Image (cartoon, rainbow, N blue to C red):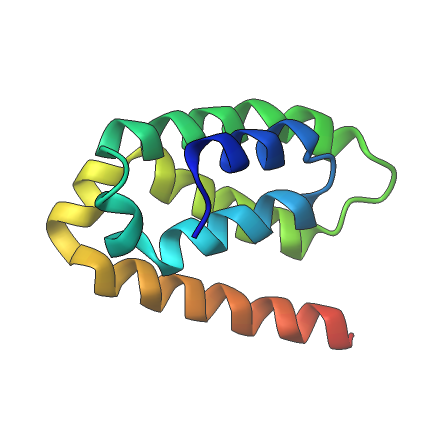
Length: 110
């Protein structure tokens, strides 16, 4: 688990889709642990921060659209954290992360 400071450093240094996906997956995969440390608003903040990064990621030469779609999906979960958590709980986030990881494995192998 990362601290608030460590998450901030990771986000500020993130320049690629992979950088952002890594921290998003970490947070959503371990959402119950992070909820002991942060409020739901913190997840919303991270989602908005990631959403603001999308234009720069799209501008990169030949962005991997599959990874970009995965990033956008996880960003949406973070942006509307309360609604998704209330309706599906931690298990919904874990299933979503598993699904994204499966898609990313396929993307890497092609």
